[in-house]
Length: 272
Image (tube, rainbow, N blue to C red; front, side):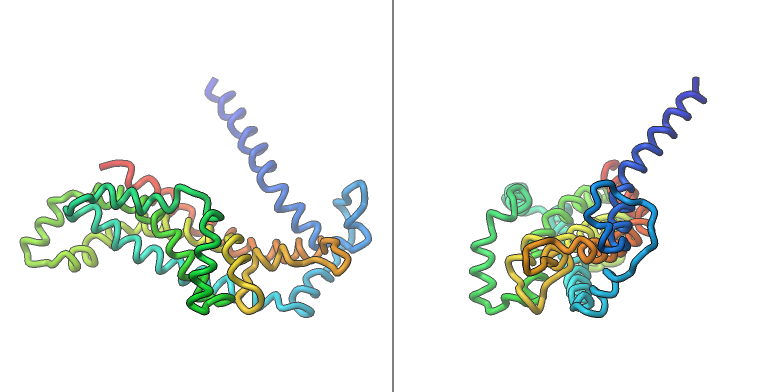
């Protein structure tokens, strides 16, 4: 019976893997198809690869600029979000002050409604600061929206650290800041990695705010993918597929190497 269960499990895993990976495979396949095969009624899976689409986006377009914009926005947002979120989580998990839970709920409230509802006020604020179409605007906005998520993940872990450890450090003369840097952060590495991975992926794929707040100089990859339209209004499927294929490479690589930290980090705050 155990052998049958294993066989069924493996079959299910294979089916789920194929179901999940096939869109990525077909995306890459479309990016290397000759132009005349893109609109065939019956999809072609065997053909002579054509790298014209990659040549167009790398040589004839400003693709590199979009890629650099995404990197220069996503990395600072990830670092700032994890840093500020860890500060806030430590404060809420270790200090006592009035209306603490209400204040924490208000911070989380930012994540409880669609970001589209804040587009107009955010646009007006960024416009008044004269930061439209700048990477700094995206960094400030995206960081502010991701901090509650990091605080939600890290607070559970920080509260699971035995208070006796921190009390012993305080008796030895450590200030709260020293306790945070020397004791809490080293213990919180799995959760810090997990929250950092989630923030990185979310912001790399962010579309709404870059679409509204940028126009030329600070356009990121998701917006660039959506903007590959011909003058007649037809989508350039080859260029879009090539751009999307290269855009997902950092996420795949990041996910493969950081997967173990993601699992450990999300489970770390589940037990006390």
